[in-house]
Length: 341
Picture 1 (cartoon, rainbow, N blue to C red):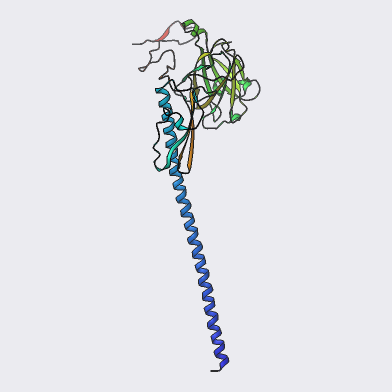
Picture 2: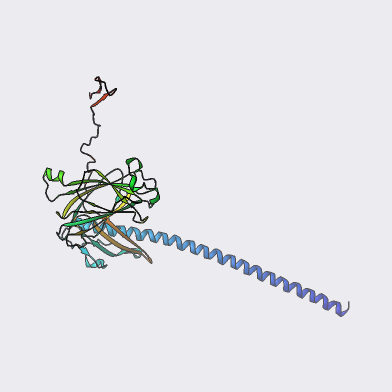
């Protein structure tokens, strides 16, 4: 075999070996990239799982903080009306102390027993009864009521027109629910005073011209429909109730009709100052952490709740016997009677 043929064969072997090295290197790179990708995905999923677990722990710690504040305020009425500093050690009676094991604790507790805004979630099955009383002792001048559908489907376009309201079009239809609103001046508790100073209103959400955003307390017929013009999908409907200057204490009964609602109340007094409400709700703000995950909860809670308020003048658990008298025709003198047994 000549030397030139040997050289050519050796070159081919060298080239084959070089290609094998390149292919092996590429395969190693691809396998490494795939491995790194899976590792990153596993680490990310693991971190998300840990974060979710820590988030739940922080949430439970914050809920524990709220429960501690509620218990402390109920057990000690002499606690200050407000706590504005975050330091949980500054008020030992408010802090029962969540065990700080595994770096889980609530780290900030703030409360206000005289908030400037009252927040409610109204249902359709039971009324919400609350006390409206100024902390300053000044008389009310007006209150403003703002409400929207609880699940956020505030379709203003689905509301009936304010110029043509009727009870047949009140159903929510993904709009804003109607609100039953009974306001009573309780500065005097005589029977006649309670009857004469109770205003019964149905706040009827509507759109377009012809509605109102203001009404006077106890000025016209009780049980009236008030067409409230709604324009904002965020805080859909707002009504100001004026003419409240004769008292600093009112009882309020609210109930949503056809759908659940979120409702907020603010007020001003006769000196045009923002009212701080007394004995209505307590605003509690708690921040908690679980390692490096932080959760914050803010709630508005009544410290005293009216249990099972009656929904009507008569309430029966066994049914009510109604005496019916029906004429078969306009000129008939022979009634059809359905007498109770």
